[in-house]
Amino acid sequence: MKKNHQYLYVLAALSLGCLAGWLVTGAPPGGTPGLEGEGVARSLAVDALGLELEKEQPAGLRALVEAVGEDAGAGARSSGAILLEDAYRLSADSEVRAAVLAALERLGSPQACAALAKIFRLGNEDAAQAATRLSRIEGQDCARELKAIVEKEERRGELARAALRALGKTRSRAATELCQELCAGTYEGALRREAAEALGRIAELSSVPVLAGLLGAEDDKLRKASIAALGLIRSDASAEALRAHGAKGGLGPVEARLVEEALERQQGRGPSRLR
Image 1 (cartoon, helix red, strand yellow):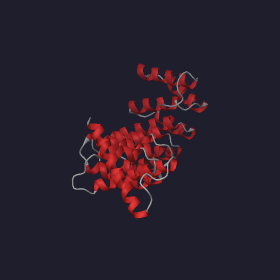
Image 2 (cartoon, rainbow, N blue to C red):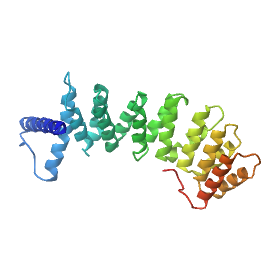
Image 3 (cartoon, rainbow, N blue to C red):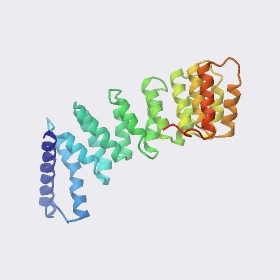
Image 4 (cartoon, rainbow, N blue to C red):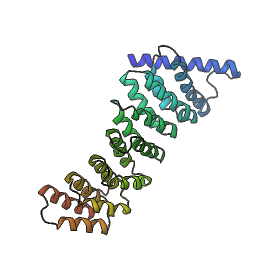
């Protein structure tokens, strides 16, 4: 019943928008039947959300947010994304905030990526979800935002690690160089592990020497991350690096098993990349 009330509220807001458009342009409410009329109605969702956000006590935000997220028009993808970020900041309702994150992912525009990145930088309970949604948007815009977060956090700390984790999930080859740099011994161990795992997901051949070099690290977690990553890059060089490491004396049973599993992936018995 509550949700029905929300949608009635949206319908009323859109109707007022139609009436306002009619008074200004002389066009009849509802516009032209068919796809053109549908486009006019959908564009009003952004206006309705903007009008509601101007009130001292905005109401019915969830339904308005969902309506904007379903709008495929240029207005929603640009100005609508900015309004969604405003709705997130103005509302303390967890359902509204979750709806904002989902709507921004659906829009998938550069502005939506920027809005998700700003929400992620807040470092609150929604940071992980914002990063996940960033990683699922196709294209390079979100990858650039995630790289910027890692740099802004001075390549250290939990927020940088979370951004790096999400960056790997984008499988953006443009992130390869940064991830390779972050494998260096000058960075904290947890960040180096995330960088190694990201290189495995990206599966770029140029990462093999970097990952092979990490097999000699003192940090056993870093070695294990590198083994798994090499198993996701199918090439003669990565297989050779794994076999050489497996032939070393003194490997623990867990590490030895990981080498075997990684080599099995090399032979096509497992996924070539992490899912």
